[in-house]
Structure formats: C-alpha cells, structure tokens
Image 1 (cartoon, rainbow, N blue to C red):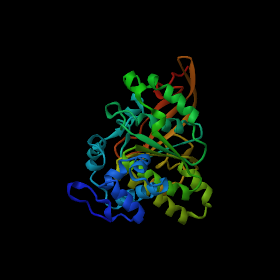
Image 2: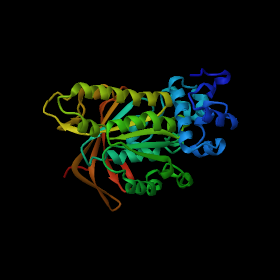
Image 3: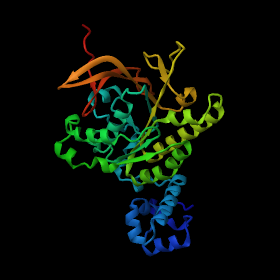
Image 4: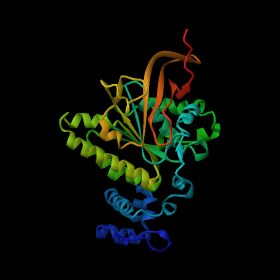
Length: 353
C-alpha cells in the first residue's frame, strides 16, 4: 500500500484495483486517495465513466488504504472537524440539563453505552443525537451526519419526523434560520443488521466510507445485545466473548481514527446480587452482556422509567431518570428527564404530596 507522498497526500497508484478501474481513474486525473474519498459515488461515476459497482470497489480500496495508513486529519477533513485532537470535543444532547450531567455531552472518542428497559427512552435520545450532530460546533454539534444501525425493530422514521418538526421548540438556543436551513433527514443514514455478520460487514465496509469522507461523525448501534442474545447459547460464553471483543475493537478503531462519537444502546437483565459495582445507582436490573462488554465501554449510562408522571404545555410524560454508572471524567450522578413531542429534556422531579 502506498505511503503518504509529499504534502501529506496518498497517491492512489498502488491501490489494488482492476486495470479497467485504474485506467478510468487515471483518465479522470484523480491524483490522491483524499480526492477519491471526498467525492460522492455519483461524482466519481461522472468523472470516470465507471459503473456503480466499480466505483464502490474504488471507494472500498481507498477506505482500506486509510485504515492501514491513515492520512493526517487536516488533509482528510477540514480543520474544524479535527478538533477532536484536543481531547475535549463533546456532542450536545440538545438539552442544557443533560449536557450539564455529562459535562458538555457525549465525548468524541471511545464507546458510550446507553442501557435501559424497553420504553425507557433510549432510542428517543439516540434519534435526538442524530439531529444534534448536524448543528455547527458553536451550537454543540459536529457539522456532520449520523449512521443509525438498527438490529431489532424497524427504524422509527415517523418519530424522527416529529423530532425534526420540534427542533425549533427544543433548540431555542439556536437561531431559527439555522434550524430551518438544515436538511436533517438527508444526513441520517439508516442501516439494518439482522445478524452479527451483517453488522460486521456494515462496520467494516459502508460505515468507514461515510466516516472517511466526513459525511458522518456519529455512529449509533441499536441495540448491541439483541444480536448476541439471538446467536449464542448461555453456555457459549467463549465465542460470545470473542465476538464482543472484536465488535468493541472495531467500534473503538472507527471512533479514534475518524473522530466520531459512538453510542451503543444496550438491553438490561435482572439483577439478583447486591454488589452493584457495575450496575446503576438504584434499580433491579443491570446492562446485558456481562463483564466482558462492561470492560470495553468507556462510558456507561442508564435510563429508567419511573412511576411518576409530569406535565408541560398540555403534554404528559412518564418521568425517567438518566444516570451515569461509570465514566473516567464524570461522577456517579443522575437527573430526571421526560420525553416530549419535541424531544428528551431534563426536568425537575415533582414534589411529593
């Protein structure tokens, strides 16, 4: 594979390509891997005259080159998108109270896990992040899109449209003109993975292309536990641990190499021990997948649905609690949240009567 040429660019000449593809790229006067990755499939088809399948082969070869010899970030992405190098870049959750809990939002780098029972609001928060990432950095975003990989249910497109409509109400800190100018739906890439093989293919082929181009900076997997619970028996812990290790390694590599925020939604299992060292502050459940997975995530968050109800502007919502279970830079703490039509917001717990 080619080494970076002078000026920090990588010559594509030594990529493993069919001679027909190589000749077409040469005729189009494309000089670098960076130029390939910064072009869309349609642009490459027009420039080279290649078929869509040939262009995809070209893009995969270019992405593979970046995985083995990543170009300097300033050459691959613009300077604003490379601020993850300062180690302090955060993706806002779209609510000041939630951002305060996480000291600014989700970190760019590492794996953030969000666990909770069904109906707790995990997917709601993930969708909200898919919109938040599209705002410019001064408004808590990353000026990019998101990949949402669904492993269980169909993608909640109807709920996403509700959240898009409600952005002007949720994000009152953002100028209304900016909210109207963003094409939210066009920047969310939905993938479906019915098994681990499909998930691995998605993470090693399609997702790196989007990340390398700077098209996306947020990766959501909803959920991790679903596939492992389906494919492994309870006593097949060795193979399950091996697959979990491989998955976490892939996710961490993508996050570190391309400066992306990674959110993995996880299911829960009942707890019969009083240990609580890796469980939430107060609950009878703990995140699924055990110690193997727990040791691989950087931040563990949990959402619980409580019995109380809260009301606001004619809306009613079950009260939830978002808790920090562990994180290298956060104390174990939590705040109450509610799911409204416009999105997930932190709320004050109602006083007991």
